[in-house]
Image (cartoon, rainbow, N blue to C red; front, side, top):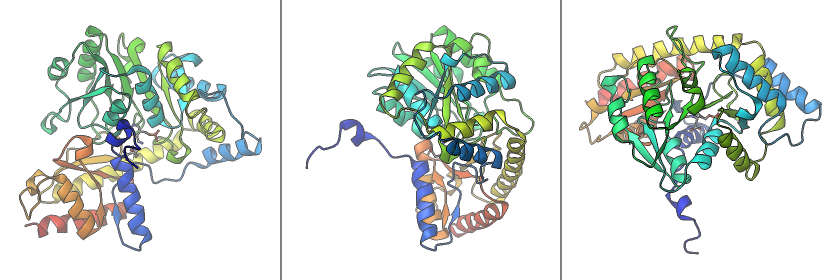
Length: 395
Ligand code: PMP
Ligand code: GLU
């Protein structure tokens, strides 16, 4: 059969992050001793009170549809967190609950981007942003950012890439894959640009609670004048170790976006899972001490992983301030034993040393690999031993 696929589907790349995690699991199931640094999810069990809430929901018989955009209780819980954490005020019709933050982002792009529309995406970026923009028929406009500038995009360069077709900019701080958190100064400069060019800002704040060194997270919508033009995306996956329960949400006073994204959801997935929403309510309004406990463990692992990486000759890493990723520079290895870029090195690590990590290409950099520290100290230590051996063997 010829041309069975749409052009859209033929051009779409699968998620490289999910592909590596799947590869890792496949090799492990074959009995291969793989060290996995691919994971984009916490390795902790979902806290008990959250699991209990999901079970209680099932026992109450909550196995039916809910309103498409989320239960009243969950919207209230989302509104309460924004208010208590950041003093940000939202109404129920400013919130749309979806099947994960990824789904929220997909709905947003489908709602606001069409053929010819452009979205500014600072690089390195999370693998799914450009693909989602393409799926909506729009054009991703990549704004390169350099490691020597702490992976912060140059506002002047970003502004020079704005065209009459630019509709939105996506910000992800703390960032996947670099773990870098934008400075307040940069956020303010971006706010000024958004205001000056009447752009919508999509702020993916999924790592807002995973911030280290006692730094303070600034939600983009809290910057002067930005509440009205920001669509904030967040979810319970990373903060509460609930990736498999699939609950994310968007919040914005731009009601047309909430309504349009909700209509898209109503014609595609309907509501997110009912018991998962009940679990998310408990996550958001229940005790938050587990969040702090997990965050502290991540911070210690970050310290361990970055120290060990920077001891290895051939690779280096800037210290991430948030999330659970290190974006490791491998350029010093290029030219050694046929290695041309980070993709080659990642492949070598997997094939010969059984270390799984995500090559930087799908994040917009062939100079880096992404290693997740959402894994135990023992795994980090063993993985770093293997990577050190690989670098040594390359000469
Ligand atoms: N945004 C970023 C930057 C992410 O790393 C992820 C990871 N999955 C998501 C959004 C989506 O998370 P989820 O769909 O599990 O809520
Ligand atoms: N966001 C995580 C990652 O980057 C999970 C996988 C995905 O959804 O891409 O690894």
